[in-house]
Length: 128
Image (cartoon, rainbow, N blue to C red; front, side, top):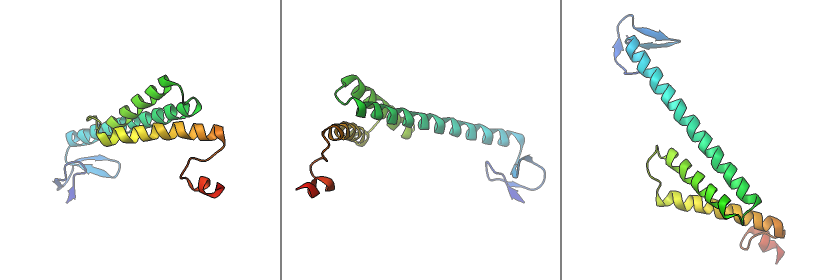
């Protein structure tokens, strides 16, 4: 006896097959494939949102004084956080994390232009 790859029920003989997996019937195999496809679609959407968020932060690094870019990065970060939490509302932790990412992007751009490391960093401690 072999367990069904989707529901776990025991298969005495027969059943449906998909590659090396066995299912108790074709309906169970179909539900398995539908669940797998939905998971793949969600993962690709999350990956795309992550790439959009990173791209928004990169644009902000190039022009940290632009409020429209800051707003775009904030919205992209919120969208990404909501997808990571399976579509539920973002939390205070998410808001703080996105805000920190935006502040770091702006600070990185400012220190790159000035040629100095931010105060408190190991590089600034060596300059003293």
